[in-house]
Length: 117
Length: 222
Image: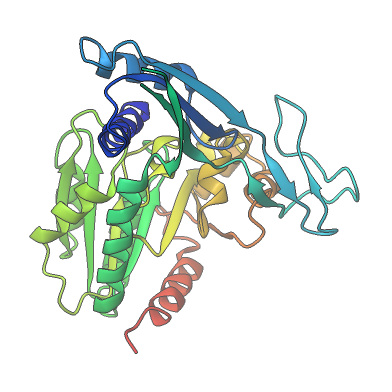
């Protein structure tokens, strides 16, 4: 439900970047979100659409790419990604350690690029 | 005119993080320990605060920022302990952000304050994404909610320094495996401290208080 706040923040950055680059049309905004970040792509897309409806940004397309979860094993230090889509707490495939893994990637939430005209 | 792809690479929540950073600096200068308390609705955040504010009132000067969608019920409950309290009504908003906290603390007398508790909106999802200038996030989980909550809401438990497992007096009546819950909480967070408590029966709180004392001591201005 906080996707609306995220979309508001996103719009502020977009408007700032468009001004900075002297562009008036936004074609695409590309977003990367980690598997662990609490963002629902459909909800963010809906929030963005609602906020840009009837504005000059209405035609813009939002593209979202999920960043997989990468963990560093607590015991052996090797990196791995839980492939299971239903469970993210899986033992390390290298040594079997179950707890304490460090999140290397998967918490991201950032704009990668804007396509402007 | 041709389209140009402009690499941006900016954190979408950078505005929130910037204010949170300013608050952190401000609290550091004041030497105030700030804790962001999060849980589902009804896990017992306010009851934990009532206990803590009462039991430690001779030891620390404490204040509370209360976040709720509506009503000032919780602010009145914690104010009844004698602590300062200020209510934020998000009016539907599912989380507190750093700007709301910055505004709210203007209503508090922060001089000589030892600990500021920020009681977030009851929600295990959204508050996890928004720093509010805290030193530590503390997540409460009550045994009636199920021991797989840390598996279902991993981000919240990943970023928390401590997990308070509340309502342990109800353990005989529910299927809640303490070890399983602890295992999930430690899944991506080897150092999370876990405190099983019953706020209602006043059990297990001493270890939570010791943790608070330690955290407070490490925040004192040098």
